[in-house]
Image 1 (spheres, rainbow, N blue to C red):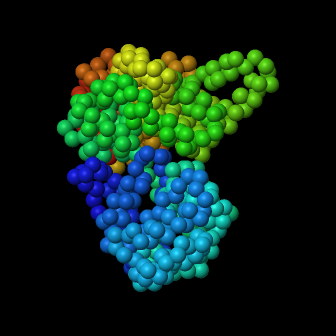
Image 2: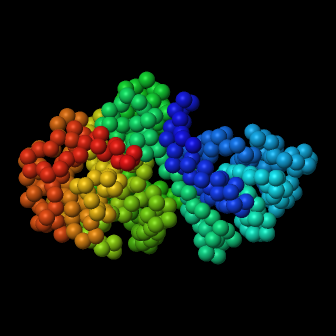
Image 3: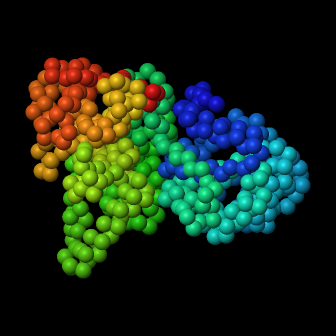
Length: 486
């Protein structure tokens, strides 16, 4: 199954293919399978599953959990969903004559239907269902082990609470050992290019940095009538309810409904240019030593959660440094959230007062320089992907930056094999012009400072891809964009 663009649905070919493979295996073996699908809110999880169920030739039951609704109402909705399948379920009248009294009974009705052939069951917003009924996980495990696993049932659990969906499969939980995880990220740059035909690769990366690949934002940019991301941003800043302004708050509120410390840490990291946020600013106004200690403890815990549990923050150490190195810095992982904390969060109040011009002014003042820094992790990911097919990156296993403690020297790209640095590179992401010969000489001068880099190729990375004097290899925006199609 392939994604199409006739109705605004783009990319996701790998996700659709994965579901098709799962269903084919279920139909072939006659045994059940549970797929636990997770991803941030607004990245299009439900949309891609709906597309899969539309294309499937077997009955598909799609149930959507509702936040805060009692289990009885959830079960009534789930029973109604049995009647709403495009391909009717066998014994439909018998299965829906009355609402199921429990999840065990409802799952038993699925078992009855599956005795006649494969059935796809989707429980969207599964964490909300489980929050309403603490026994749901256990009931599902019991029915699965006794009945459903022995029948051709493809059960898809979807959740936007990324941490909770990860915990579903942990040792000691009812569904341990029974789940096949599937992570759905936002659209990648190549999928953004597919959604925005006619844009240059340089403009596609701009769109990706602004929207983060969130389908709703990409669609908004494409349908806005604006020719580029910068114009879309300026127009969006005039409306506090525009998707570009409002989506981040929806995502963050879903992820951290009560975690003010986590939000403060995200804000400190996202608003900072250096990747080394001054967390001491979070202590401003806390004169009492006990209060300062409490905030320090909250910050440390929140940072650990953001990096190790939620994955919203990336902890970086220089290339070839140990993971435990204290020479570390932090970056908001999601490109859209990086953009939002930099340009929107600090100006939300002004935008709501009709002073979006203040946000536009801040954007216009340093967008070019911020873009140059924010694109760096995207470039490094592209180079790592290209390592599968590009001879200059053969055997490369990691692509990371390198820097010294005081920040006076930094190398944007250190592409390493298991034993040595294969490529040292500089990224200069300019609308006009590429890497200069002088910038290549500066890179060459620090070659000996970077561990294991004596024999490394020197690379220039820029939108136009020109190879200046002193560069052994160069990559362009077009070449980098192709990495997601390799």
